[in-house]
Length: 93
Image 1 (spheres, rainbow, N blue to C red):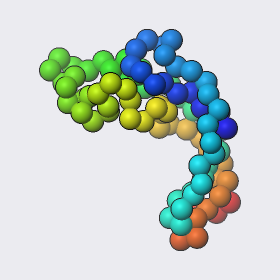
Image 2 (image 1 turned 120 degrees about the vertical axis):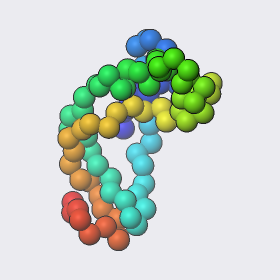
Image 3 (image 1 turned 135 degrees about the vertical axis):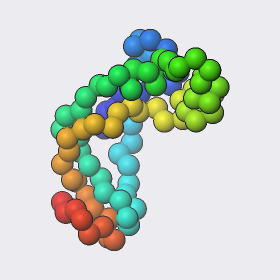
């Protein structure tokens, strides 16, 4: 599957489309297929590591010092449920 990832902080040029492995789900998880997503100001701030004055050190502690811990941005999306773990009750394929 394809994803837009960033392995370093910086301008929009750091974003790259890469082929990544499809995740396997655990008993209490669901696997979703994204239909649509958005790019928010939060995504832009995380990518560039733009923080209010005095918060850069704390941001690096939480997000990663030299490179981002989580390399795929985004949290707003529309989805289709592809697979459901054995213990999941609120969703179905």
